[in-house]
Length: 81
Image (tube, rainbow, N blue to C red; front, side):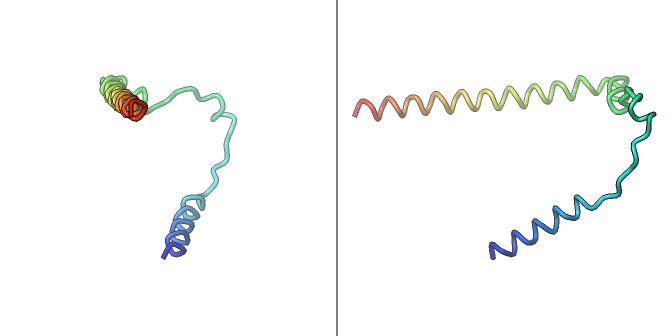
């Protein structure tokens, strides 16, 4: 069963690699405009995105700190016994 999962994942990853290669031109190197960011900034959505990313990172930070405190308490209980 494990072997079939490995084969399945390999086939899926090969499908992702098998894409057409697009030639890079001189114009691509001189292009410094990011259309998606400009569009999101003009509509004010970039601030929502930054806010969501900030909330996610803050949540991860709170989770890591609380887990560290719990682990420290458990270590102290083990040392006391």
